[in-house]
Amino acid sequence: MKSVVYLPTDYEPSEDEPFMNEMQLEFFRKRLVAWRNEILADSRDTVKKMQLQARSIPDFTDRATEESERQVQLRKRDRQRKLVVKINLALSRIEEGEFGYCKATGRPISLKRLIARPIASYCLEAQERHERAEREFWDD
Image 1: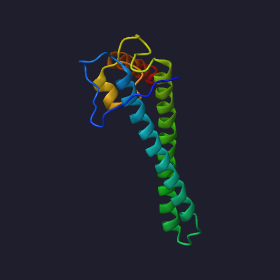
Image 2 (image 1 turned 45 degrees about the vertical axis):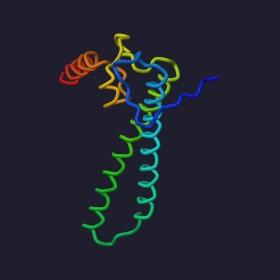
Image 3 (image 1 turned 90 degrees about the vertical axis):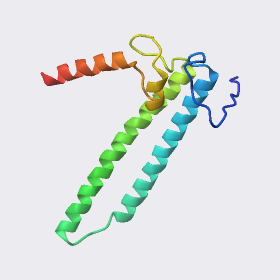
Image 4 (image 1 turned 135 degrees about the vertical axis):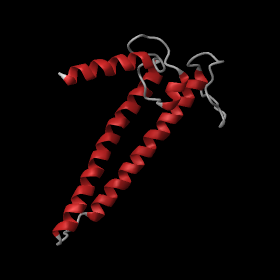
């Protein structure tokens, strides 16, 4: 059974403590869960709004504008859906003891990077190599 970790409300991970200790892991777990909950709540609100707006609009211009707005909302929801998948993967990495370590090199990902982007699974150098390779592949 997993032990409960007390996390002070003002806690911030520090380079002065052991990397990915229980407090750091709990900090990131809480941050990821809150982020996921926020996205899911926003998604539910968007669905409700879209259902309320689903009506017949006789004016062609108004109907086109509403359809355009609807498409923007659907693209946003798709990006959010993909983000929730990444958040769930990060939460799984916490449970498996792999969170905070680069998938390519096995080295620790900097705390600054993880605080800015807690779903990061690559250290900055490996991410840059990955993006360069991706650009080269897609440029062909």
